[in-house]
Length: 264
Image (cartoon, rainbow, N blue to C red; front, side, top):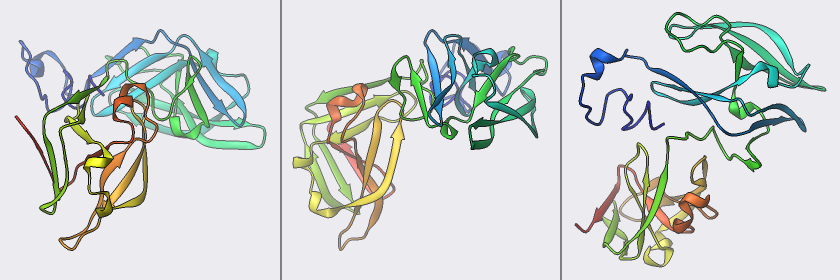
């Protein structure tokens, strides 16, 4: 997300500053494609249906990055042409395929732009998959937990002795001088407090679970108190990925009812 979302150089609106007028130098909708120097594999119904070291990544304004993979590196016989078609004003007419392995079929799971419109990067001979319609994706031999990882995106977790205070509906919920601050490209800094420094008796487990390709799987918590309730205002990564490992088991907070104050 770092190029076309958040505070990236091609985000709309632009959050940072450049030494030239981007509105005059670039179109309102930006496409940028580059090669990836990593092996990408996709698994469906117990079979590797695509395996390539020639992946390309498309960055597009307001959209998450998307892999485009050579159709030659898709397993023979797993793509069945669909009648479905869509048109993108920035890329052209999209052709679709169903994905079939044995008796298992996912409709319109794959698309391509066989004749991109003028000005679009050359996407001919490449196909893209709806990431969540396959059973698993791998970069090299590591399974990815969510959507494709952006090579321009990073997460930095840093321990901090600054005093961090959390209140929800003006009720004190946490205070710590042993927090971890997580800096993530395009997102506000998030402060994680040790569970021992949080009034966990005011938190109730939520059924909400989210998955981040950079941090891992997060469990959420509701706030319950006489002052008022607030749903999914706290989250934690019980088993974070390497980038977020310093925040393992710690709690972070956000939402309209939440106030996080950090000592300056």
